[in-house]
Image (cartoon, rainbow, N blue to C red; front, side):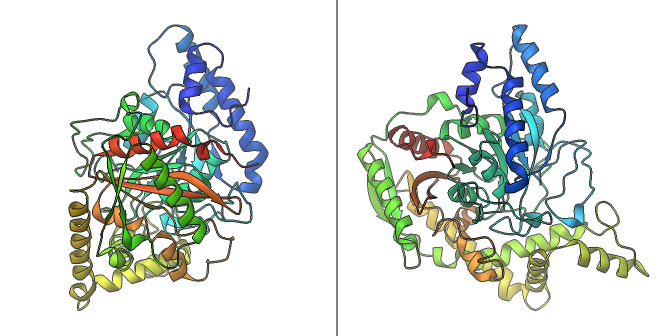
Length: 482
């Protein structure tokens, strides 16, 4: 039985029917990791207790106990989600050796649902990057072509699902860091509405933008995981009490009566022609499924990238101030306190992290705050207003996820601006705090292409419905790397 392409639903049904054990499922995942991880460099560590946890789930299932929706399902975690007793570093030297003293809320909820936490996935250094090349531990390779990047910063999590290491992984999305690698690796990636999922226990990058989301093989699986991790958390004041929670079984089977918007600002020069072709074919498929397609406008979308690269570095420079080389993680001794700070941060932070900290500190400094940061916040408000207006007339907005397929390792590494442009279609959703979903919709030169669906705040159900219907009518999500 090949479990490397098994979905959560398939694995759960087989375990409940007695045709598969959690131990066998986890063992298969571990064997696949052992065989391929040295080359792909997806997992930073694997939990040695995973098999024992799986045996306990099997014993509870055999005893007839009531189990959670993810009972016995292996899950990988991006290396910025705290797990009590695990080393968690955000792939940054500055946190090397840091052992977590508590669980992130999403981790607690996964455990409660019976998930088997199999290990930590690679990511960009402190979540700053779009290719998983800035990691202190070295780059991750794309399972579809090992000379290509998997995207970032949740590249390890996306690659783990694509490579068949696990059926589900969690990532974090600040400007597209779940959706863009999902697109480049040919898997499903969901960024929930800001506040739907608790950020407690997530190593913060930009607190007003960060959201934790699942990477899976199917939209239905993403809905299953969201149902587990969503909801109000007393530890996170920005989390929201939900009136409607995600229920995968209630996803409708067609798109009759729905209206989908195509923003003209997203279909511009610079997009890979093969990406545009695949996206438009996907739109035609959605129309065939019953949706009405109309043009919409997001007039301030062209300013999203500029606003993001002021707001995000500003928040990052503040959040990373806690990494001082004294309380936890990497430490370098200096002649005095200031010298210790300078040495620890200078040696502990990577080049991209330093670049963004300096940019953020500059825009927050006296004399520049109004000129840059305050103006960027005004642009953010205009972008949110654009989405609010457009979503009054349509149920969701459909765009490409990434302007191109995966590029070569090292190809954009020394060109920050070109690298930043790879997130040009995903950033707006974070600035507008709306939910967004990326699903596979085609290939170019053997590399996956992603379709992005953005919707109204806390209306993940509509996005998941659209994605699920599309996956019922196509088979792009069933394709796997050789």
